[in-house]
Image (cartoon, rainbow, N blue to C red):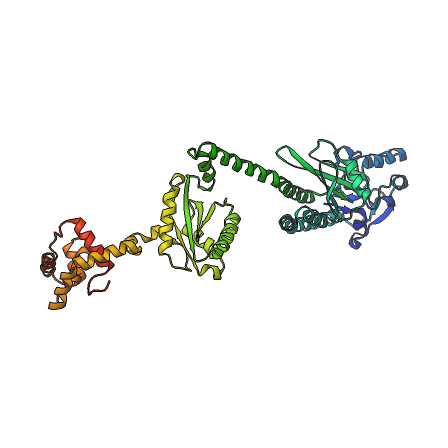
Length: 509
């Protein structure tokens, strides 16, 4: 960041007076410093406002002129000469040389400390730097949105507005692809073409005091797609260069997109051909493709969505695809008849599946049921799909995805076919106990259930029934007699408990 000499002179508190070199008022100051060296030029890098009282100034007029020439040759912006101490006025030979060189010489009165000049310049430069960083932080998101919404021309225009400069994008042959302003004049385009350095990845050329051309090659992986160039009144600042590099990266990705899509299509074509030639026996390429969906441990989960209509399924797929891609995951999805199957990374949780499903519009969601499998190795894809389908079959329509592992302890009771079998067992086996309770007012069925749920532990079952264990033991002996089975066998106890949970004759669940 820098400030012009003119701006420093315009600060009323400093009381500065221009003595010579009016032609250089537009020179930019990037640093103000004090030195009394007789020859400070070797320690200067250009752009400085050098402040001196002349203590080390040579005594002869010729050497004094040489002093100013040396500063100008090192691109010093201006000389601030303090009067009232060593000199009562600025030496006339310095004034004459200033007019000759077009290098401003400014008188600093005794009442103005050099520190005040340094502070004023430093504060202004800091303000400009902060403004530039703030401007860049706001410009970067706009440039990023531009590539998504408007492509190359939109990025070019946004960069031009952010840098307050002309911008042009040339292809590898020098043809204009995009520019800002859109109708950029031919003369400016030719300036850019003339300033290009063949083979250079980046460069900056100051063609005239008010024209600087900055360029960057647009390329990815050794492939060059053209040049992004900025034509500005002054050289680009570091922050401006960051914006230029950001825009260049976005353009490179956009230009490279077709080649990446072509490469992906070639891979798929090759895999399809390989499957045909192998008569479908070598599926290694397919498994390798699916491995992209797995987590670092090679695991996947499967989300299955059942729909009442194909239209709802299509809308669900579109929504799920957007959410998957925004999360940075490759989309592996298959739509069958009224069913959608999606592969997720194995480390993802049910919360992510709910997020996928939650993005589906409410009207479509009403007719959907979704199930989520546990984490499986990629090679057990079929198992994962079957698990997700089972969960979807008992999930609530319009509700969130049901995770199969959440059915632990109630899975057999959740699925229609297995529940029907258990109800039939209950009707055939438990009827004598239910009839005894109905005829005698006993609590054999409740006592039997407490005993089974306590896994045969007498104390726990008696406590659950609030009876003495001897009372419970007598009841179980009666029930066992009616059932004509051996309750000491764990398999028998498990089957009876499942039957009771499914439904018992004359007794609620």
